[in-house]
Amino acid sequence: MFINGSWVDGRAEPIQHIHPASGEALFQAPNADRSAVDAAVTAARTAFDDGPWPRLPARDRARFLRSIAELIRSDAANLNALLSLDNATPSSFVGFYQMGAEYPADLFDTCAGWVDKITGATYPQWEPNQPFTFTTHEPVGVAAIITPWNAPMSLFAQKLAPALAAGCTVVAKPSELSPLVSLRMAELIAQADLPAGVVNIVTGPGDPVGTALVGDPRVDKVSFTGSRDVGGAIAATVSARIGRVSLELGGKSPALIFSDADLSTAVGIAAGNAFLGLSGQVCVCQSRILAHRAVYDEVVANLVGFAAAAAFGDPFDPKVSAAPMISTRHMHRVLGHIERAVADGAQLAVGGGRAENVSNAGNFVAPTVLVDADNSMAVAQDEIFGPVLCVLPFNDEDEAIRLANDTRYGLGAAVYTRDVNRALRVSRALRAGRVKSRDVVYDVVV
Image (cartoon, rainbow, N blue to C red; front, side, top):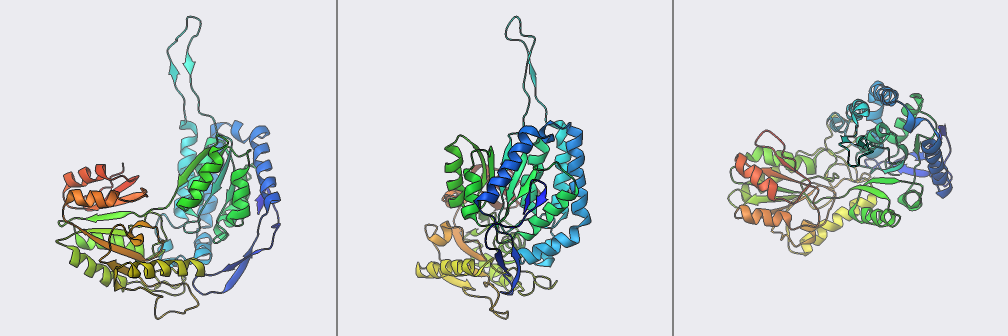
């Protein structure tokens, strides 16, 4: 672990990392305890209150961030390989921009460019003896960033780079299921010679490590990406002390496929999210397919055909296109969701069990398409986080919007149509943080 500018050993029993694709124990990761979290928060608090980082000229902070960006680029091949060791992301998928090392490097460069552009404002006088009023942006203080296992490199950078640009100090806790990439990035950050205590990294499970970090009153802000339930618990803990929190939680994102859509595009994107790459272990995965009744059967047939494209195995094999579930426990959770869906009355169009023609030592689940489901079923309401799609028909635009909004999630959605007016109209009606429309050559973000 990296605390106060130095590498320290874990304080608890090391974490045994079991590779999801092979079932082999590949390495041990350090395991923090509450005392390690306390040391990391103390270092970050001292670095913020008494150290130079939040007081550096903007151009100096920018230089540090650009240095980190170049160090990441120089180590890109190694970081990409560590990602496949961490969570079995297929090497063929690491080449996608937001998965590999190019993306975090660009993020640090982008944030370096923002450092001297975070400005306040001045206002005319309100009192006779007051020449003017001005505002300024201040770093919030000590930021705790907690990242998930599915995108440990990109999400680590998404949280860390802006915090550093703003002048915050940081305690980061990557998932214990994929700590390698974050620890390697800590080594690169150490080479950039940031002041001690500005960046600290502790590894270990959510309890006690995450619990101790979130509950420490010296932490000014918590940024968390993960499940809805854990996010709710974090929000309750932090809000009790009037702290700040940013949450990116789960999703059950609908894909609305209208009768005029380019079906090959719609199915390719939706099925690609669910069946290839991380095999549906992505928060914005389009896991509820809402298809117009006129094209429903064709959509289902295309999804079934696409399922056969998933190739399982060693993530370093360039022919492999789909990842296993992150753990045996999670694999059984996904399979349990499928079993419950069938028991509730849904029908299997394809899949439904463990993947065939691959070692059972890995946590591979076959791409699964469920039909004859109802939107009230658990399979249509719960985030499964695996290669599982349920396909629901709709008759008209109003019904599609109603079904799409009938969820407790609101992270993302997609609209597939050639009609630009419909794309804009439906996008505005959907209660989702991000709505994509692919057939009209642009993304609609609301």
